[in-house]
Length: 118
Image (cartoon, rainbow, N blue to C red; front, side, top):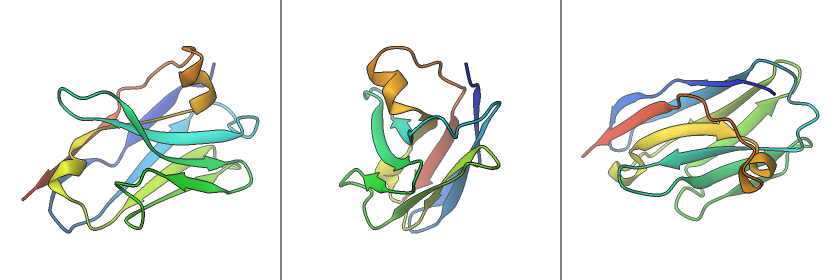
């Protein structure tokens, strides 16, 4: 199974930007959809952005227009550019394949903490 390692989180003021990266230990080319999830304290993990192998993107309403997901199948990476950050974006961010998540087959990495101060 592909192992995923997230990085790029940190502390930023509201209105700032961060770029998260997800590095896969193996090829992600065979995985049609990759996504970024987040889990705030006391909240359920939610899917905030996804991208197909061909580059089609979907976003949660709460991040639409502010976040951009991209993937590089040759480098086995998925990135999340986050702009205009808000305190409510504070969470641990993870990448994974939605097809594995919905079938309870996903192995989660450590995630990367994003903290947005007001």
